[in-house]
Length: 331
Image 1 (cartoon, rainbow, N blue to C red):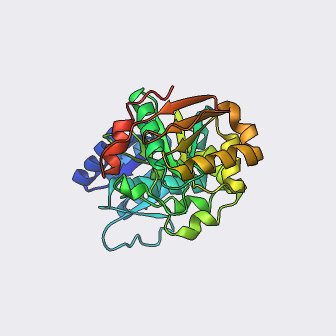
Image 2: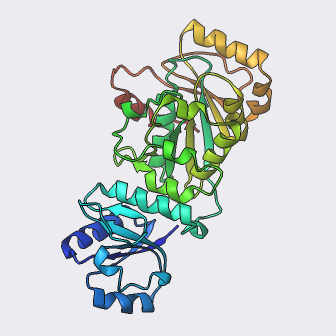
Image 3: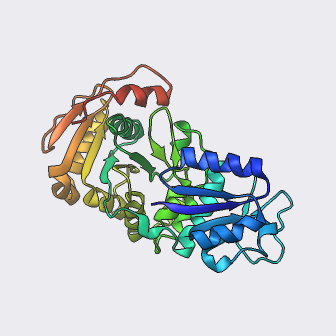
């Protein structure tokens, strides 16, 4: 997806700063042009068509807005944009917030959707029948492992209480803003709120605003969300809650691969055995399921396609643990 974006601002320093930041950090999303004078704007709109434009109020009267698929008002601290009637994007906020605003408006207007690749990511669901097994750590270790193999890996946490803040600094828009749009095509908006951890190489989403946001999602919502998150990347790693309700079963079934995490405790072993012996979903996912023996566990691999053994990393820092485990052989 490439959105052709025009920044029309008389504040040349700001326009240049924004242009450079977008070109460096979001080169796969935006093709940026800058216009610093109202006189030149008319010529630029005749010479090229733009998917979106950030226009300061002084440019409204001279701009042929019909030549721009999505004109947006770029407003200062006062928050006023005259009588333009345009959607507003505020200057001087975080670049990631500006990107999120622009792409949210793009998604609403259907701008940029045709640029997405039809290819979808390989989806790996990570689940455990017992809490505390290290499921999230394993999911992030696997995502980092795929990133080290030059794969574009995105981590999606579907736990009711998100643990993402324990691993990443959350500074972007909440994924809750996506949930009300799931019946439409939301890939553009998701691209705008997706965060990136430069150290591990993992892309991720900031957690929901509250517990009920995840709980309110239907099975169909979850499937639509995963389809949207999987667009245009190589790997999507889905971290599931430990219950096995209809939504979790749906993810286990539509995933390309499943990892079931077990720790050394007897509780973990008992719950794993119950799931394998008493739940019909296991028979349906068995051929694509890998048993992850975490923290030095030695659970038998009966019925699993393969087994991966992970050591018990002696650290209380969850980031250190998943980065250490990312070097494991998951293949």
